[in-house]
Image (tube, rainbow over all chains, first blue to last red; front, side):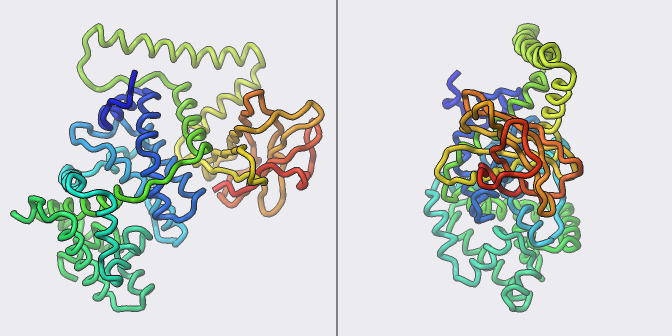
Length: 194
Length: 242
């Protein structure tokens, strides 16, 4: 069977039936992305590989819990990897984390349809390099808040303490950063018309 | 803090637990907020999906597939929760039966060939590899120029771990590889093994106490039968378990 012709959602459907070939194909297609993301968050090769491997293991164990009718297995996989990597980061910071077992909480990783739609709309218009550039082009103070919150797992209070600025400043910077990201990434997306 | 600010901080997962719980109550009551949240999360997920890819190592791939293989050996394929015709059911049943027979063959084959202790060991390995909370740790090679890899699987609080090695040359009969669990700075013998012609081996390491996550795993080359203390001049792998 030539698995390379299947889309991600079909592969996940096959993985739910314990099809090892489908799992290998999904891994071959996305291992680089998943490892790139865990490395982006953790910054250490060995630990990043451990977490990336765990993300794929969760897919193997939890494929039945993924609702393929809602689409976008790649976003689901990326979401798992992000959460696992942030959990590892928070453990090292002693911020409380909730242990998740793949067998018990399959649905926790599912991404809402609307979020997946936003991602797909952005990817239809922009290359990965352009998306990365949108983050890089934020004013330094705003980008720093996104980095510390989203990629280092800090709360707004921890960020304020870390940067030695009032909490209100962090709230404002986070909001402005997201507004600018939205402007840069998704001008044609439907929500602006709502 | 305004609602918009709370929304952004929630999407970033940057609210404190109590704030998060309070905002979730607001979310539950507002379709508009939920839609806005989905949009903000979509932007962040787009950032995640745009990271620079990174090639995984052979060791990572091998360790993952070993876990998958172990899982497949213990369970039959899962039926998909849809209505099936008889033909569809039979198509599922045949590979299921084949796999189930294969798993039985492994267990009973091991029993017949090597006895009850070996079967129990195999069962312990499979239980560990497929159990909840198991973590894989790549144990770095002591010599950086080789292709040998080692991966240890353990769950915090468990007393056993499984070590998988690959690309490690077989030793002559006068020597053996020996694994060590280093706890509080003291090396504890964790079992001996040799690799096959393919350079691979698997070892069930019994630690004698629950893993805390602070242990290190080492592998040395020792005289046949193993040693009480490791020969550090012949260190093959050394690294933390977590």
